Length: 346
Image 1 (cartoon, helix red, strand yellow):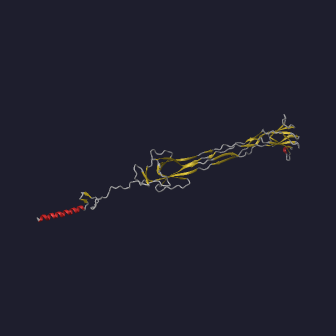
Image 2: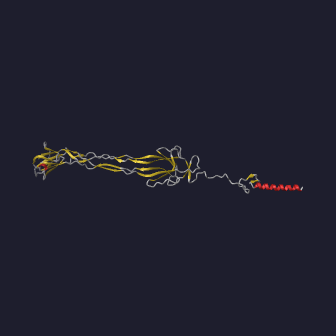
Image 3: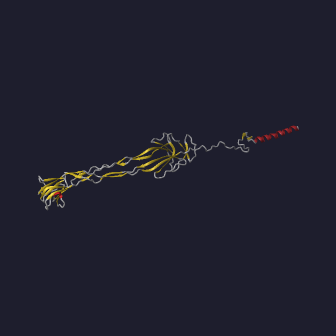
């Protein structure tokens, strides 16, 4: 009997040791479930299913945007500023320089004017007619004596008593020769450039966007707030793309403006202002006495009775002007090398 009792006590002692040993391996014997964290004192396991942010596009500093379309450049940030200001340098998030384009060209008004100076070298060709009417004070003698005057001095062929009536008709004298200098005005102000535009690209995709979108840094001043794509030529924005705000820019321009060449026509006018002076010496010799002044309008004039008339001095007067050609501005300002820019809507 004593032997049986001793064996039962030994069995109980060995059983307790086994239980203690199994509990040390992390199993909860009370619940029958495994304690996977190896902590025999706690039933609260570590949550191995919690999410991490390593695959999400950083909010605030980045945004998911559509990737560029085949054949286009970008996405890029865009700067638009005054032409006189210094353009910002590409760097940081967008290190690659893109385009440097023109925008808002202003073409000031030009002035082109053509004029002509006073005619020079003009003479009166042909001849005027000097008529002698004797004592007829109305100069309406039916058959007066007359001389055709074309030279500066003309001898009348004898001596004519003083106190006689004469008239002079200048209509036979006509304007000939000469020219006028061109007097032109050309004021063509240079083209004014109000603003310039540039782009910077080359940003790195930070990842975390779906559907092929790129996680790119949000543009910061001085750049515009929306990303853009661009390509050479004048084309439409890609169909169905989020980059649908289209604008055209140009990388340079040509200025062919110039005033048309001015010319002056030949002097035109009349010699009606020519006149004749009657003198007392043949050949209009030095020391002559003026006996009458006759305008070319056939006015009847009485000569002086102080001496006999022997010669006539012809004073040719040409009243002329030249007609200038029409003034006009030729050529134009043309923007060259177009660039199409398509940006996302704000």
